Each structure stands twice: as C-alpha cells, then as structure tokens.
Image (cartoon, rainbow, N blue to C red):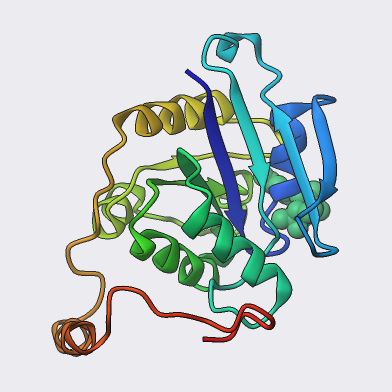
Length: 206
Ligand SMILES: Nc1nc2c(ncn2[C@@H]2O[C@H](COP(=O)(O)OP(=O)(O)O)[C@@H](O)[C@H]2O)c(=O)[nH]1
Ligand SMILES: [Mg+2]
C-alpha cells in the first residue's frame, strides 16, 4: 500500500531538517503546478518502510491556511484537494503557542488525519520548558510524537504513528477546541454558511 505523508508547519520549525533526515538523497525538487513555489517530494530512506512505499511531500512553510500568500494557497489547496493519507504537522516546541494556530486549522479541516511532530525537544530541558504532551494530545484530538529532527531522535516513532493513522483512514474531529461561547458562535455561523464556498482562483481570496 503506497502512503503519502504531507509535511506541514510554520517557517523555521525544522521542516527541511526533518525532510532531509527522512528522505536523504531520495528527493525530487520541482515547482507546484503553475506557481514558482518550490515543491519537494521524497521516498523515506529507511528500508524498514520499504513495504509501505512511503512518499513525503514537503508543503510550503506557512503560518495559517488563510489564503493571503501564495504559499498558503498552495498548502491549503493541497490539504483540501489532494488527499494525502496523513498530515505530519511539525510544531516547534520552543514556540508552541504560535505554531499551534496552524495546527488547529489543519485539524479543523477534518478531511485528513493529523499527527503532530513536536520538534526541537532537545532544547526543552535546557530552556526549562515542560509540555504536558498527553493532555495536549487529548485536547487537540490527535497523536503527538516528540522528536528532534536535528538529532534524528523519535523519527521512526513518528513514521510508525503516521503510517498507523494513515491506515486507519478515519478522521476524528476535535470535540471542543474553544471555550463554550466561542463554540456556540462557530455553530451559529456554520448554520448560515453553505457546505462549500466558491473562491476567486486568481488570487485565492474567498
Ligand atoms: N535544536 C534543534 N534545532 C533544530 C531542530 N530541527 C531544526 N532545527 C534548526 O532550526 C533551524 C530551522 O530549520 P529548518 O529545517 O531550516 O526549518 P524550516 O524553515 O521549517 O525548513 C535550523 O537552524 C535547524 O538546524 C531540532 O530538532 N533541534
Ligand atoms: Mg525549509
């Protein structure tokens, strides 16, 4: 069974480091169709995963899925239309609050299962940061694997989890991410909106 893993994350969260560690020399670099945004794809080099035939696609580094920049349009379109089997969302553990904004958006799109790769964990002890990974995973509703892309720690555990989730094929939407009054407001907006919203493809705005 061929599996496609899409790597998503903020700029500077360690995506290139992780992509290189996973794929080594097995990389193909091109452009996303019609735009000058770099597209990188590669096969996982670890022979352990040969049977699963795992392809990793590196999405442009973005802060959100809101279509303001070309990179955000590319990533959003990929997540919504190309149906990767699983999204690995790379989160810089030393900058967790800013990084989790994209995470909530990825999880909320609901079409593709998400595994969070909590990166830069090698720096946490040094900086006196403690993260309750179990609780965070429960609140967001998706698995979290602690890694260090730089030190190549936790990478097999991450890929094992991503493959497991990809094979399950079921997507769990988080029950309640926001406070009750905000959840209620979201519900009332949902009732008004149609299922799909058309957009002006030229600049990606709604
Ligand atoms: N300490 C530490 N640094 C990392 C780790 N992963 C990436 N970095 C560093 O973070 C910086 C940004 O990484 P890069 O892979 O270029 O991020 P990208 O913009 O998401 O592709 C580089 O200096 C990396 O060496 C990690 O796990 N631990
Ligand atoms: Mg990069």
